[in-house]
Image: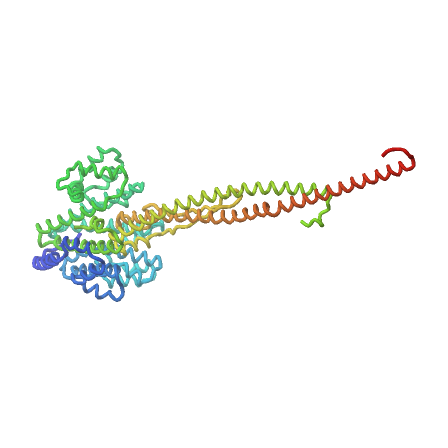
Length: 371
Length: 220
């Protein structure tokens, strides 16, 4: 646990700057317009609205959807690295640690690529250096010839102890998946511990993370259930949410509707689900009963989570982050609000571009946007 | 068969008759085999056609789920999930006997995988990848099965061709030639019998005439 001293003027500067940037992000109406365009028009639009540098940098090497995707990824990475650069002191540290989730994805991609013997060019194309590990740090890891050497290069990374301990464990089969799961569990544990410090806005951030964990854990439980697998709660449930691990163990044993609804009523997911379902179904005031019936149907029939509902939940959480960041305007929340919105802007643009290039109808693409 | 090479004896006639009987029995058996092969061919073709139809629908669905997954995870997310696979699917070939021909049965190994066996972590991925992976696993499994059906169809066709040729050879050449030889032998034997009869008749007549000449007044 680290103590973060307060520095008001630097907070005000960074938070204000990021609020301005957030205001410059694309509004929902723009996505609707983009849904009616073709890929060349979208590329031109991106070139004229904040992604011009990346489009011009890669236009000679990529074209079509590949150009759009690489431009979006690189823009995201440079935006996040810029945020880390301008954020001062301990705020920078918390921001870096929050963005460690990108580092986990990058590190696992590199290790898998090295294990498969892929070329450095290929491995380089997978990474999005949007976290604590910048491009140079990741390049040093990619330059290693072996997985052990690559892990050695990460000795100064915060999650290195978990990485080296987990990767060295037997059995060899499933090693990468196990390591990845362990890294995410440690990531969230460390992040929640960091949120217990005196940094302004950190307790609210902790609350935000805990709800995120509840949603992620429940979603993963549904995934496992849909393929008939039992959840290994020790390794596949991330502890730290408002619903304890024992709660998910109890849920797995529930077979009747009444017990299930009683369990679900006690969670913070239900109000969010009610609102999300209302958005998806166009019903302004859905009731708890409707939401419980919906989730029971998915649970009892062992279906996968509905993506539209997931997108609606993500949108609602963004709205809540926006509201609480206004309660604490000069806190880490303003930074995270921008980071999350920027992430979803890139997500939406990529979804629209990919969907159009694959010939998916606009109406269907719309269901997969966070707007 | 050259008539000159076959003596018109009773022994040869009996041998030819035996050969004709054997050829006719073989012809009957091969015709039956040809019909069974036809039925098997039709059955396998129907199975292959049904499976092709199913694979076409599965491919459309798999492409759609992959497109959705690419929309949500991006090319890089999908590429990383793809390289996470630790166990590459294998094809095992088993042979079964059907009407004395060996037909292959193709079976996939490690094609369909449990969520945990695919190699990507549960906590860092979403269910769109599960759906795409499941769709393509089902597709690959059925493609392997279809390959087995199509290989069986080729083998059955080859065997059917061979059997048809043998049936036709028996029907149009071997049996007619044997029958013709048999007829010729029978004809020749009848001729020889008639000649012998005529010869004996004339000998008897001459004898009678000779005996009549020594005893005048006796009628023939």
